[in-house]
Image 1: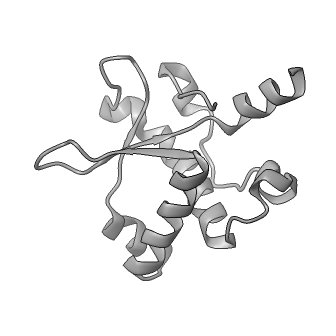
Image 2: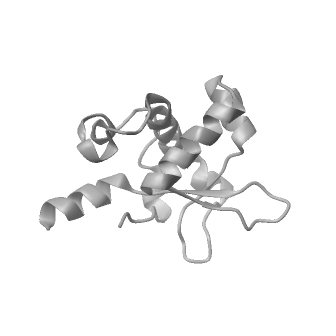
Length: 122
């Protein structure tokens, strides 16, 4: 199980990069290149968490990032973004809280690095 990002951890990725694990780890080999890139962009967006106060009642970091904004930022269709989000959610790299009435969904970007360390230790 992947861990959530908490307060100070949310800012550790301030650039856009696709983590090597998503490229080389066979657990992620079925993800599309677009989904891997979107995950890299979501990691970069985690740098905005503190400035926006995006922490839930359990102190977990989240993003408010609409599908339309994702599509505009990346320059692809909303349909493609929906597919990428589904891929990332399906493998557990993100969790979407759709219960925020009248606001953007909360996107919890899960910490893939914690997952790897745990699997190495087991």
